[in-house]
Image (cartoon, rainbow, N blue to C red; front, side, top):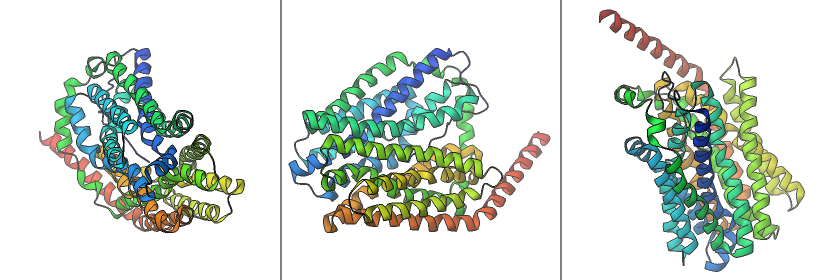
Length: 443
């Protein structure tokens, strides 16, 4: 899953002078566009069976249509976020939404696989920086003491959008054909992208911190970026999180096809059942994170042990589920496995925050997003599709949970070095503060 952190200056309350009612309107519209983002991304999964039958596609080709979006998000998040800061966040968000919605409409009009691939490529380009820029807009219009709550609520929109995309897309595809599934998502996004810049004005949300832009830019140049990759523990957090999302992301993408092929569910029913499984994953992300905070309040390193437990637990449950005969017991075990499969998201995010300098937390979470996409969300569906072409989707699903063992091993490696890496970071922090104090005295 993606992680974002406010890039706003924590010492400045950028919400001063912004009416609370207007702030909630900004949140609602930005949240609505995030839902549109994930609806456009995940609607494809609901129509996999129809595309496979109409165009005689292999599973690897279908997996690539899904993976290309995550790949572009992973590759373009950094440069497009920088451009958005320079070009203007509101205009950038509206332009991004217009692009991914227009590209989704292109999916509806595609006449062959090649055209569909180009359209999905453009969906990924449009969606690449929306999460990081969107959360920056949201936190800028609310008081500082609401930022954590709003960040969590905003990120949850990805799950809601995924559920709506698969469920609504499945219904539209069953009633009107797969092209209308894409068209429905596109129309929703185009309407919001046109409304957004009319209601949300750059001058109203940026006026309080424009004066600080120069100082913030100068501060960024001096940030200690080396902590992003200088410890074995933080590198392990990136890799472990990405590998675990290989499992969760793959199951979400291929589940509608699995239900269609082996449970003989029509497209609408398969999309609805898959949406329930996605909701289990989203609920698990929240519940596992809360459990981690409660159990590890005084021992942050215990979160790594919980991450290992989540990896191995999901491996056991999902391996057992996909080894069972098709039926309700299997579906229940899949839901339970997905409930904890994304449980590593909280511990991994905490590790990254603990192991990197506070001044580069935004960049650190963007790096985690990059790892999640390049190691998990992008290759997972494609590789599973390739394996499915050889041994079948049911057999491929039996292999997918084994990736969690590799993720657990990486987190175990992080646990061995965590205390030393934390001590090194804290020592560097003390040295930096002492140096800053000395400079102030000398000046």
